[in-house]
Length: 71
Ligand SMILES: [Zn+2]
Image 1 (cartoon, rainbow, N blue to C red):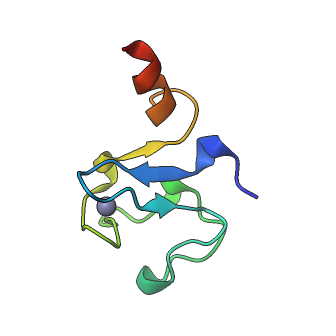
Image 2: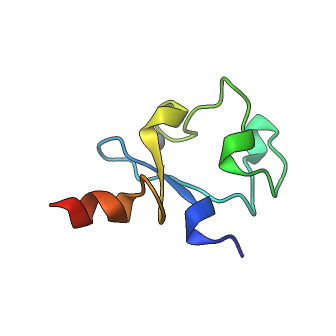
């Protein structure tokens, strides 16, 4: 299983789509075990179409959790 640091979640309103590197993104021909950093340049959220910049890791530097802890 992927570590929380490697699992990314879309941060746009009403989305929350998870990118799990264990699964990749079948629809965009991203094979399983592709880490988020290795996604192709034009990759976007399969649910809302948000760019990679809209995604944050579940854990670690710049993560969703860290943002919450700042407040
Ligand atoms: Zn999204």
